[in-house]
Length: 86
Image (tube, rainbow, N blue to C red; front, side):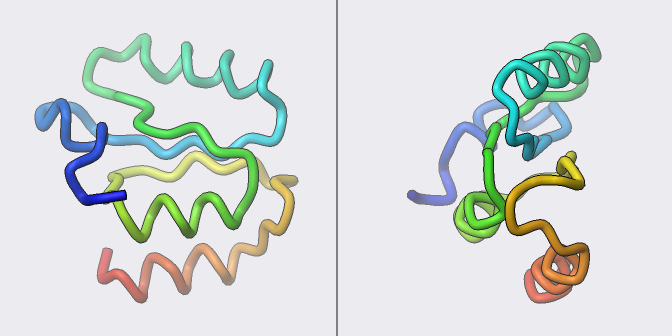
């Protein structure tokens, strides 16, 4: 995947990466987030591995990650953010 993904489609919006293991809950959270016209969910993922893969290829402004997401460890998220200079 290249850096020219949907995250760059709308340069005026705040790009959100949503991590949620439940598709129903994820869709609900996505709808709530996107009620604000300045926010855009660019990717909805279901595991921490997907967070790492997506973040390597696309920049996002905000992570919204379910605490019980499979593989979730706050230290891994912090390391990923620090490694990428954000």
